[in-house]
Length: 67
Image 1 (cartoon, rainbow, N blue to C red):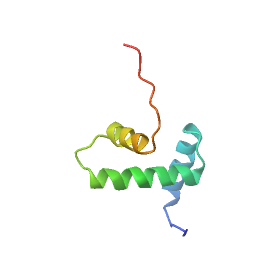
Image 2: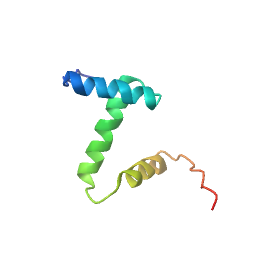
Image 3: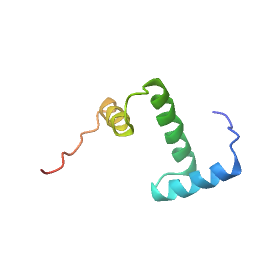
């Protein structure tokens, strides 16, 4: 584990987003880092598909929406 220096304005945005998403500030920052890394590695994959693939990899059973 290490310390990552980020801009104060970005830290404030992470804090606000973490409250909305019910995550700790560190968990929100880690989520954004991971999604950003995956987006760079898969530039044609939309955000929702990246999240869906990560949930599938973690073997999370997704509830299908009613049609």
